[in-house]
Image 1 (cartoon, rainbow, N blue to C red):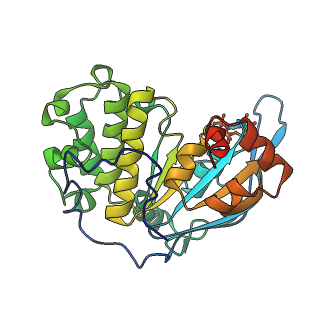
Image 2 (cartoon, helix red, strand yellow):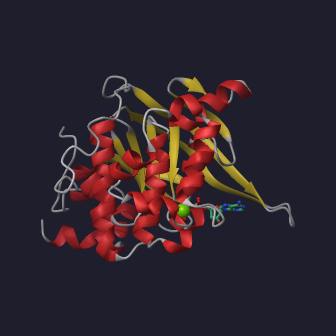
Length: 289
Ligand SMILES: Nc1ncnc2c1ncn2[C@@H]1O[C@H](COP(=O)(O)OP(=O)(O)OP(=O)(O)O)[C@@H](O)[C@H]1O
Ligand SMILES: [Mg+2]
């Protein structure tokens, strides 16, 4: 399987052909388990009414080093809840989640603190992810102070170069950044941690169309050059198809179909997958097959 499916997306290498070359190699063999989710159930409780809503219903998935896996599904199907639980950031739920072979439910606090940076999340709204009171430089400084050893491998300017941002960006505040620049800053902050897993939750859907392809190309490049695994959540099937090897289709909290993107998109077996393919923005590509 090739590392990156180009699918007509502009490559990000033209301006900085060696942009990520110096990222220290620290990745396990391709395919070695990075994230394993077994029979995950996550419920949200409404504090006012006490009502319980099952957002993730017995979901299992696995991502190996260097692999990219997509989760698609309509709004409210449980994608973000799944991603947050899987990275130990959201409601934990029941079932087993193993990050680099360590079960999140059985590790102690200290080990969890060490494990958490291995999974970095890039969110849909980059401005919402950045502290409006911090310049880019002071935000990076804070991250470095929290994880000094993990983050000492690269200087700020070189880090920004990896995501194709000028050093002058360091002195800007989030409101002085475009959406595309702000998302690159978020990707740089994730990259600084040298994660084994990058979770991208609709990373381009809040951005102007003109910069979406660049940000995707950057994520693909980071995956290819660092060997990090990528869990991509997206409504856009063209995006999923261009970036991911495997897709899981979620419906009402359950995974209703899984498989290689090519197979699932070309020959969907589940009725809901068929409906989704017909309704999603990325469905355009199918008519070209
Ligand atoms: N903190 C919460 N408390 C109560 N219910 C929640 C909470 N977070 C999510 N939900 C509910 O859980 C369900 C799944 O939400 P989730 O955000 O995971 O969906 P999603 O697939 O990511 O949707 P979208 O595509 O709109 O981002 C939704 O019905 C949502 O209203
Ligand atoms: Mg979501």
